[in-house]
Length: 152
Image (tube, rainbow, N blue to C red; front, side, top):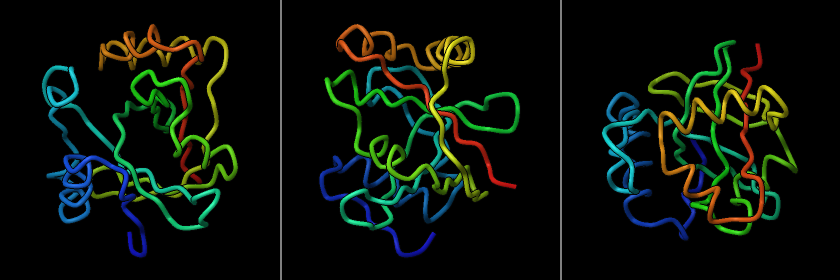
């Protein structure tokens, strides 16, 4: 993925993860969740959105799980902060994005899961990374469950 910006506001350990991922997708695909209160090595993808204000391609690593029907699920938790993460706001403005999963790249269209799908995917994600439960308890907003559907 060329011509992307790694936001200056990201913590150094996230910037390092992105750089490792871009250099070698297999090496970057797994992330040590103990850095943020989880357990073990978890799969991550790189999400590249278009900045709603800057128009620049912005990249962020996110924990993911497959949806079971060819898509990928991510959680817009921002650690339980009261506001949605910038990447989610970018997707609200423009749901077309790119992802890298290990060494595979896809164009995707994002959507927010609702109803039964949301409940099922939330449970899958909480089972994979239990701190999501604490994040939800820390905020009044319902944390969005985002599905990234590859564009065929």
